[in-house]
Image 1 (spheres, rainbow over the protein chains, first blue to last red):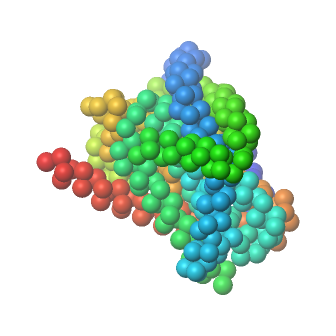
Image 2 (tube, rainbow over the protein chains, first blue to last red):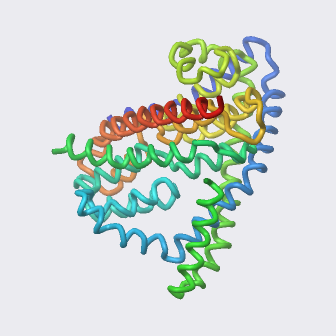
Length: 177
Length: 196
């Protein structure tokens, strides 16, 4: 199964590239010139993205390094335990929507500490895999096209993350009962 | 809301550091955070230039149009504001497919391109349109068939069955995405009612 999956992911991208290039050549479309043209757009997007991303990453770095995030997690842990939510999951649940790299670090640590096949290891894996970093996604996508007013996007994204956390706990408890 | 969250994250951190004596760490974090952003953007630049170059060829060759024709019945229902044959549709589908197969690197450039096309359809340059919000809501709750990164970590720590979480991850992300779409639809209705 694993071999099959890794084989597919290794073949997928080169095959997509091949299909695009062969189709363009068959249709006599100037592929290299179009590639350069599209690439230039990519460069422009990357530059317009920088200030959005930099501002966000600095704010997150300040919050984490000051110890405020850890203090907040310690504060709400007893509340979560009282509600029947595994308190060990609190750091991951809170960091997941904010920072992708930090969340990956926490997940790795949890898998290492509790073992990949423990309840907490499976739960951390599911939680990490089932959502993306909301704040990062919104910053990158809105930033690249220069939209400053996000509307309800952040609200829905964060509510969805909250639902995702609860669903992960329910699904993992149920499937691996 | 994003202004408030942004300012609060930094302010809370600084005030907490004052009380907690971690100001030196905060000083470091400001520069490290800025540095991380540069590193990240450089990594993104390579991916953006490559994939947007490829997708430009795909667009001209009619591959994106073919893709949107294939999935037309589903996506026109999720994105009623986008004409079915608009290029935005092709990029949205390319982004979804890349996410589904765990090709995060390729998904981001196509997603950004989709946003750009949706911006052309939008009559405001500064405000997010309904389609943009729906699109990003689906992206943040990312449906992935095979979470390769997690499987790799599980293998690294000698899991008996590294892929056993594929099912739970898929169910969790499906339920999350559907709930997110419902909340989004509800808020959209509310926005439309209040603008009447």
